[in-house]
Picture 1 (cartoon, helix red, strand yellow):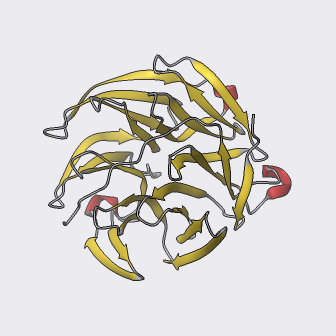
Picture 2 (cartoon, helix red, strand yellow):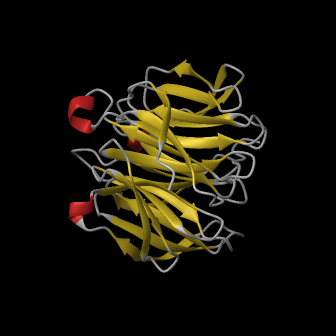
Picture 3 (tube, helix red, strand yellow):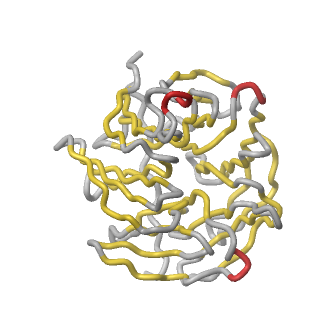
Length: 287
């Protein structure tokens, strides 16, 4: 099996939210707490930092017009396009002390994203509709994290890292409603904390393992079929990309302390196992 290879290393505190931009054939990712946004062009083998926002970027989607949506602190949602930032949602008043963590667009252009719990209050899980309206789905979240749709788009996976569980919701494409939340996979404590995730073309789940040093692949029934070791303890997220979506990109954290966290801590990794993924859906907020 091919070993993961470092393709960019900015020694990120928490590299996260990798996302393949099909129009540009490039990968974007962020260092969440530092508010840095990066871009990697595999054809040119070139990477660069394109934003230093000065505030956390906790989630990201690609819009239908090719711009990026950045999900930030205080419930702020910004649109980035060709170097220009436009604010679409200035804030969510009850999230002024929190930040978004992970985001996913659905087939209709809506976005689901959660906010982090603080010392004073739990986090929340929201749906943002194309007109910018907000619907709170859950109000007792801890660290809402990786999400992914099953191939027939009737269900949505959702991770809560502190719970150590990957949940499954029934999903109504017509309305965006989520219902019937139940536990799909429960992670043994000794294997680390479930973080970002995605779903491949066969409906298998890929879950990054914070403090677990591995990327896991699960069959649709929740049984483990593969685990891939990395030279980093904190595996934070995973996405598919490339022309045929068989390129796997994995982000890691802990780049401020590689002596403890591993030689690849904070880097962006690549591997290709010949397993195809699928494109992420495009958001249409404000379009």
